[in-house]
Length: 345
Image 1 (cartoon, rainbow, N blue to C red):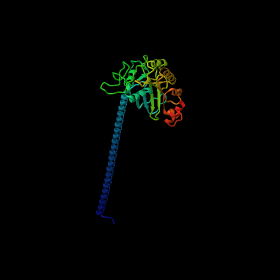
Image 2 (tube, rainbow, N blue to C red):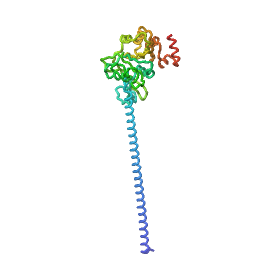
Image 3 (cartoon, rainbow, N blue to C red):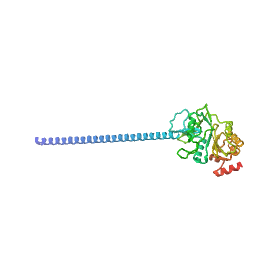
Image 4 (spheres, one colour):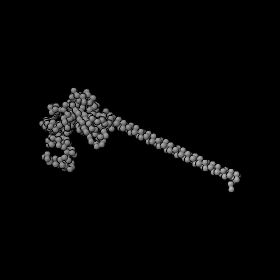
């Protein structure tokens, strides 16, 4: 039996409604999916923008930190330059700090450069000045080959040791007595009257130091074209002192000739001297003959250097280095002094 037309119409209507509902649900589902995808895309974009902003901020902070570090390094370099750019009586030391020691024909950028005075004699002069002050009228004298009297190098040498009076070659205060005009007391200035000015030379001795940040090693390159002081020149200076004076002569160890000499006079003068061992030995013998009452001291530093034992034998006082003591098998300063004293005796 076939359904009547009313039932068929109702059935078709229900099918259409079901189809419309399915289509609507499908559309809603699609819209929901699109909305979710759009939201995810928006969240992803926001996250990317946030990440980019964070990276930009980190980059900016890193740049600011780098600029701050560069500014600090520049300030330190400026302070170092202002503090250290002095040349003293021995040599000008230029120190370059680099990441690692360079291979041959390489190019490296130094992380730090310092220019300062160096050498045993100027260091000894400075320490003596700090220890002595103006007491007892003691005045240190420098006896050394120097560049031309009017050269900038010589003027810097004098100024580095607190000597302002270049005309009279006696530095320090105007009166030359270690006392300032306002009544203050200063360290005794260094007297340059016995220096040997090499008028055909304009530069002092210099040292270039390459310091490796990686290993801490220090490679030293020395240069000097100043003619060294001869024994005859030294003798002429010694003759200016009275044999009755109580004097102290100290000899610093040197790697080669051309070392400054400073004389120590315990009455009213101080003098130190540095020479190569053979020349120093000749100077000591000359002093023993010309100034029998002079006290003589020497520095013994580098292990194995020829001639140092002979210097120690001739001296009244010996300053030994730790490396020398250890090379001789001594475990302490006392052991070194007692053993070397017995050997000398």
